[in-house]
Length: 172
Image 1 (cartoon, helix red, strand yellow):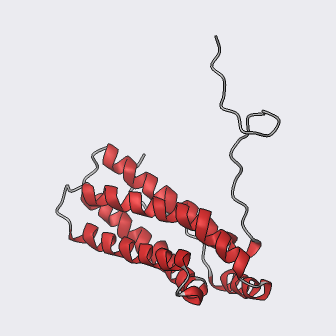
Image 2 (image 1 turned 120 degrees about the vertical axis):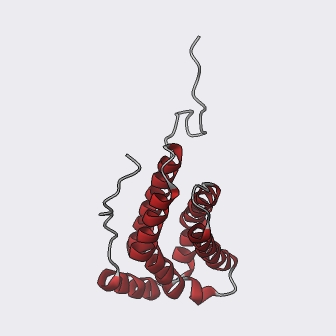
């Protein structure tokens, strides 16, 4: 007997999960999230392979200084600071603070302590998913077209896509 696929109600046809649609102006920030998820995957691979934590720490600091720090700054200045009292933005900023604290914790950790890396990966992944599923859709609804347009123009001129040219590919 064949196992049946769970069905979603739409003429009882199995449905694939659709990708999240993003306004053109927000796509660059959303694309950055892909790099954050990839970073997390690489750290998890390093942990699974028992890579010395100094190598993970060096990659973390490379990723932070070359990408994540500026990404957080862009989100906070362009988006979250406009809505200091709205729950999704307040939580997103608190998540940023927590992630920065975890990065500081990684840098202060004893060699061989994977726990701080595991915690960072979980918090970063949860944060990215929260922004993609809650914060960005909320902002796309409440920001005016002209505000979104100015954000898009700023990002087109100032945003630099992350190039992961890190030499120590410990995750492979």
